[in-house]
Length: 347
Image 1 (cartoon, rainbow, N blue to C red):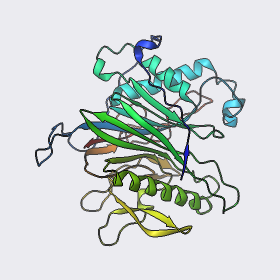
Image 2 (spheres, rainbow, N blue to C red):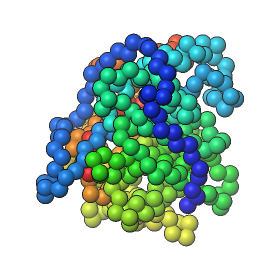
Image 3 (tube, helix red, strand yellow):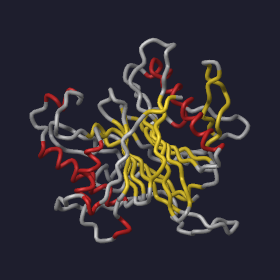
């Protein structure tokens, strides 16, 4: 496992100039009943957080450095105005969902997080201010992952792959490991954005397998230290395609031994599955006429998910069937081709 260097800004609203823009509020829906009890069934004091993970779809800033995707480099309609409009739209979703931690995949750099903070500045309720953030990406990558938090973050580290036995290694984003603390309780977040299926699902699966092995090793290390773990992000693999322990029915994050992926590893829970084995509807990603559940939360340790689901009530998706409104650079319309995914976790 290779540990990489990362950028870890702590954003303070007071230190940033405010950008005064009107933010429209949207309503949001989350499957299940919310519980705000601070005590577990055995009477132990716990903490409760709402966490949202969203692939915001190629969220580049307005400055071209040559690494942007081709359509952003060549589109005459992309620039400062279009970028600010996208920021305004993204921040309207962040405000509407009102999560304690907001994780984003596919943002270009840490500057986008600063701009988001500027757009969110002026919040009158200090409990809703995102004072903390972190961001990371591979130095050769166009996009990375970041998060905003209302509660302190600490101990950020990055875990990446160093594979030299399978030819040319594609660019793969590192896992961000960071601890969020609320009320003296700590939750380890592992932010993921696995290799896409571009180039063919079967051909690229070998790299997602490698990332699975890396995540399993990181999760095992966290569990060995007694940590509570929530892995989140875009895994580019449907939840039904993960390996299951045939005895318990739980998902196994498999591990490598001697360069071979084993049918053993860290047993994790996933909230997409209901008690009867059926899946929560709809999925989080709609492609070629089908829903999939490639956006996920996996959790282990002393915690439980109180509520979970894709956010399907808002201007970012169809009111009829929940399909996300993907961003169209040539019209400036839309949000993302993924739905935000939220959970309420008690730990």
